[in-house]
Length: 334
Ligand SMILES: Cc1ncc(C[n+]2csc(CCOP(=O)(O)OP(=O)(O)O)c2C)c(N)n1
Ligand SMILES: [Mg+2]
Image (cartoon, rainbow, N blue to C red; front, side, top):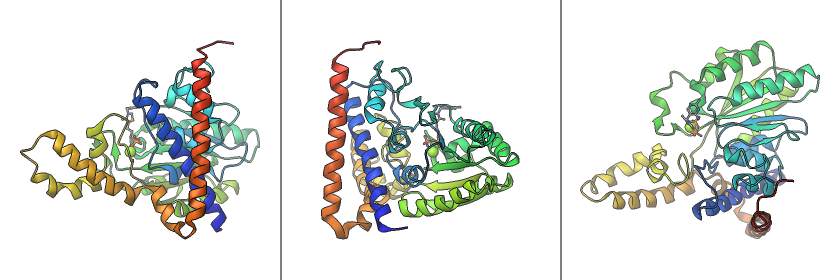
């Protein structure tokens, strides 16, 4: 992998992060309604995969669809208008952040946990039937590995030798359930049980993800059957925005590190406990944040890092400005 590619991956991740930060800002101002699931912390996994997709490849994603849609080159203004429920949004304002769809990009998301498995397998079946020599990706959390439809689709992809890349983004938690408490065996062994080759990788390291995905995608394009990626990550904002308890409880490492310090606060108010957790969370954020991890690798060229930051910041500011201009014009159905 050449250095130029790492810079591009960094830019891809930063675009997604700053876009989601802008979304957070609008959500906090009450302009976006409902719960919001961010993909902050997953960017290295998404960038490592999406950057290697070609035109005509398909993508099925879960309830954290924003980073893959942004990185796939789908117009961020249309995505933001969708989040705002505007009729000019990507799905006419009817899908929201959890149900994004772009026919042109063969990209579909769903909030039904596990559904990206059958959706990607269906995409791959269609691509194979049409003799297109393209691949389909399924992005999902490790919670989805306990859903029957995910396992059924892995089985079908295997027996039909379909070009599906199953990408499991494992953050150790499914809402408030600790995955280890409800999951038997190793996930990679489950894939192997279906005859699917698997790779385990640190999902905060974009170079590492890119490398294993590169190998897996070469096999897919060589018609070697479905492949499985098990990538570990930490969500920066918990399960969804605005749930402080879950935000901190979702990070098991943080809980382990916090346990002793928390004891001395046992008699104190919950607010103080949250404050402490917030501080600890801030430190951990640096450790597991894929952007920080990549920045460290590229730190010798601080000027270029700054330049990229400025360019991407400007782009996202313009996206927000343009979106709000359209939004202010009111909801008009053409
Ligand atoms: C079939 C189904 N069951 C339950 C839910 C409620 N739900 C939404 S997200 C989620 C947890 C998913 O965990 P995981 O797949 O690990 O993804 P993560 O949120 O950790 O990224 C659950 C149970 C749902 N949306 N769909
Ligand atoms: Mg999870």
